[in-house]
Image: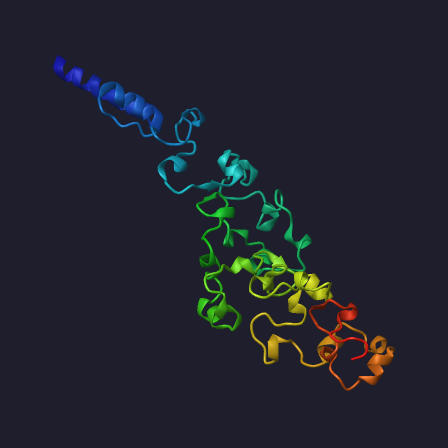
Amino acid sequence: MIKNVYTIVFKVLVCTLLMMSCGPKSSYNVKSFFFDGVPDPLKGNQLDIKNIDSTGYKKRDSILQKVKVIYHQPFQEKKCNTCHQKFTRGQTMAKNKALCYTCHDAFENQYQILHGPVAVGYCSQCHNPHKSKNRALLLKNDNELCYNCHNKEYIEATNIHKTIADKQCLTCHNAHGGSTSHFLNKNSCFECHDNYNTNHTYVHGPVAAGLCASCHESHNSKQTHLLKITGNGLCIDCHNQKDIDKSTAHTEARAQQCTDCHNPHGSNKTFLLTKTDKQ
């Protein structure tokens, strides 16, 4: 009878101690008190034990995983009410991008044209709102994320992409938006092509601004050099024909192409001339 009472008391004591040792730090302290050789779960980790809270679970993922986890700051600081309603945690304080824009800058103020998910406010289409193993809290790394929506076979089949080898989409494209429909980064073309800004004293405006797409298609075109329009029609898209005709040199050379005398990218001569006055 007495033996059974001791057994019951012992079991209650053990259960109580186990319940008090939920976290890895407290669990180790209890187990190592009764048993020898219990491995310290925190020993050898780069995380300072002083930074672990009373439950022992703060930054637990960083301890248990070899890959570094990046945390969204409100989530890391346990400020759930920053994004979620206090008594209904499943509901956010605001919907879609309105919630993100309470802390982050609105991309509508930065770009003329927005990437689809950004335009409709689906930030979570690409980003994890809590934590991720990828930079910027991305759901996937590198081009894998882009291929969630964009067809990999189609992209790799286009002329321009056949030569990019193992480069990343973000080398040329901005994931949030840009001044063109392809969201090209400024000077992204110079990743493969010569940088005319460094080769010439005078540079054509669109080239200097990195807006190659003003004259060239980014992927495919029926015209040579992926031009949008052939002949002088492309130049007249920006330059005023009446102003051009005021020049005597242009009147005499009406039948010629603009590129017979002007370099469309840059030149060491004024007016981007490729010939001297005598020529």
